[in-house]
Image (tube, rainbow, N blue to C red; front, side):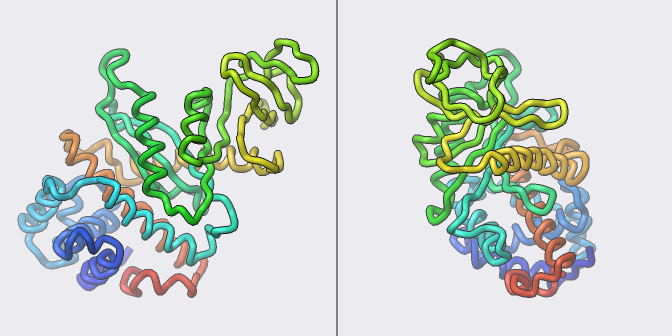
Length: 333
């Protein structure tokens, strides 16, 4: 990707329309960081500083100091305000390109990943052109012993924080794997006005309403409305066979086609592409030497921005979306 010195200025001007509450100085430093990451496709501060130096004409020491100051700046807090600014930028592109509409649902993939077994990350993303755009994450130190990290509390804080930051003009559906297939998580989604499609275990004990007999979901064929004794309430279960696998999908969405549920759950695997782009197949964040919690969290946030902009820019170039080019200065192309 050809990037010039003017791009840093243009990107900082673009960021100022979304991150203005953080100040122009922050926007300039953030734009330099993001441009350096996009140019080097790396999370290494050395590689980023080298790229910034090549683009801006600054010496390596000055570029490196700028990056280190940004990552260590206590004012650079990954809080609700910053997430709302970031989501405004992401949704502006998706809406302008016609990828999301207020009349349709937005499906959000959810899953855990780790950074070199030092940090546990719970992430949310939206499927986009065969990949996935990160929209939110929460991070904890990776548990070194059993029960060191309370996943229930982490998930509760995550869902509450995510819903608080999301634009209220859209409807959202959480799509998650079997690790989230429990009554507690589904209730958590409902409490935060979120619909869900969650895969559950095939050995879950159920009672058919018509037969009032205890059985297992794996004996069901298509769509069943059942009572789950361990949950204490009714549930709608969709059964989908995919090659040699069978998916048991639980949802609270009313009047939805089975093929839509199966399609959206299959797209959930795009979040794995998001993790790959952040790791070995992209920015290689696991190879960074940064291990301080707050600094690595800021670095991961910058990675999310760089990752999203690279996906959006590539989409503009490949599909020639003239209607959305106004969102990005021509210098970025």
